Image (cartoon, rainbow over all chains, first blue to last red; front, side, top):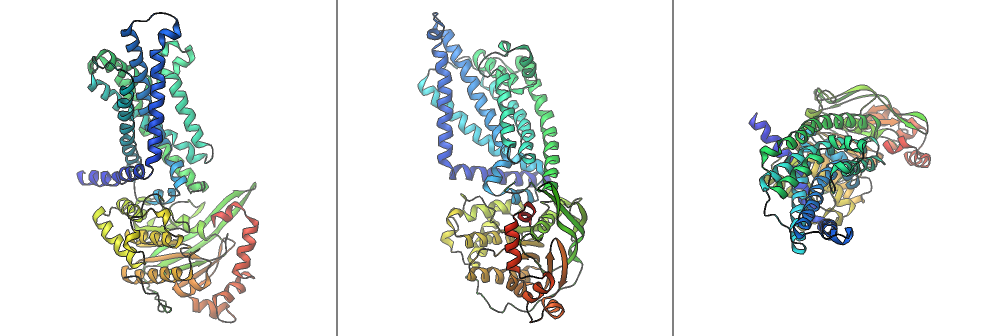
Length: 278
Length: 284
């Protein structure tokens, strides 16, 4: 049992090592994406700073500072979970682009191990991006983290990562079935989740029918939980009502996504789509 | 030391035992321009352990489709395939551990070096990284790729070198059954001969079974213990090169055999298929 787990961990590590090596080789791309992330986060944060000017009302500095942190938590948490989602959803498209899809899918690696390895590589990338973004933003804008409960925030983000891995695996099915338009379909899923999850505003401002969607989005709970942790110092016990729904989505979406992926792989093998040109 | 190219790479060596690969009644259709096209049409064949079996056919004859079925990348519409007695569908993971494939297009992460690609491949097949590095260096040097090129991004290596790295990768994992899909297409004559010699030597040294597809008649004659001729998705002839020549070859070459069986030269068949340009053609 332990030997088998170690063997699977060794196989999964192949993908982590490969992703890290690719990050080094495509370092200029990574720099571009990090700069893009920093600029986006700063732009959103400046909206918070500009709140008095935009509204035409005087806003006290403490409220402005809270508003800035509210927006920053949303944008950086979304960036982290978005990267997890994108990198996993792009597994098929990326391997097609590199021309390696056939070799990877011929390898004697269980699909769960393959996807777990890819998720591992993705988490390394997302952590590097998010931490860099946070520190870069703090160079430009004063961020008040004096009330923050870091442990609660990290746990919320970890739960969100699990949930977004499941959503990413399920969305990676699209490029397997629709070779040309599949990836765009995955991006639509991501866009809808962004809209309904309260990344930049409370979900209460959404129309009623969109609020229904926000209930099933794990990002809704993760971002709200991270805000309570970082703005108000909420502990894990008080965050449990937000932890379990996100955890539930993750625990359901990973096995469901994996089953969908395996079924789509079978379909791709029947129809000749499991190849570099699609 | 780089591999020494030999003009005479020895006579065919058929080693009979239980089949390494057995395919029965394989059918694969693709939908093209609104109609079903049979890329592979009821093909049955068996390859013995230690044998080099060449599937000979023009572009679009079904060679690559068949090899993709054998390599678990494509599911046949009908028929069964076993590898060392294991069913390719029911025992897919176990079969994958026994096989490896070299395709006509080198399938690599081009920004990574030959060594990084090979270590990654080794890990996927359970070869520890240190072992993979040592063995990769040996194989690459034997294939004539100097040490200084091992850590260069693959995109900087020539097409011939990339194909040699692909072959090194396949042998690194010590496959019991190696599937070579037109491994020397696009290589210059010297690289082609080096690869052919390497394939034969490694079969002899590692007891690997090799199924290769080619439309190079000379390659089939030089390398293969047995040859199967695919035409229009059907296996229309099979035997040792000398058997086929005795049976079909008027002037004593596989070219004559192909001409007699299909009614045209292989180059003409390739050209006709390229002009047709149908989707199944790209499969085969």
